[in-house]
Image (cartoon, rainbow, N blue to C red; front, side, top):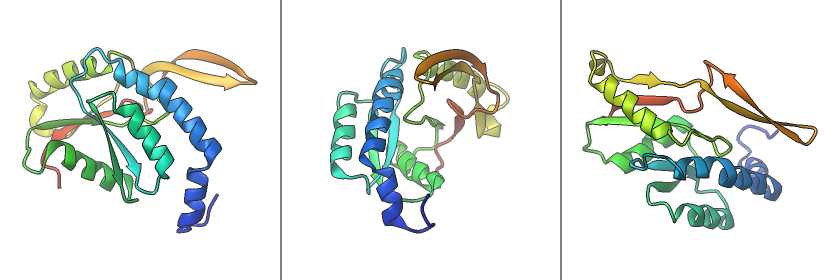
Length: 178
């Protein structure tokens, strides 16, 4: 744990070599394959990362996603997550776009079904064609999944229903991004 505002100590913890090796291993084995194997690849995945990330890790991340045109990495100055997401969305959709925008968050150690985008697009189309459309923003969640755990070196996979889990939580809103 670091003292609040101690940027050097925080960066030292975040970018510790062992920690980064583990984070990249999780990203490369779970998150990235789940996003590159989608049955519907007509989407943009925006990865928000810090400009403070050391260059070797940025180079590695850039190399990993360079093979996937629907994935972009945006390196930003450290700021609260809502502001970082807003900045990234503005860059992707442009400042003049006012149509619907769907966004979701996924961590580097999460994976979504290969049908996630396809199902999300279908749900969004239904929502946008319904009487709920004028009430944007609207949240979409699918709280069923599989949790992978490791205990005493043994992995287990369990079906899970977690109604308050944010994994795959999507927000349908307009492109009027402040």
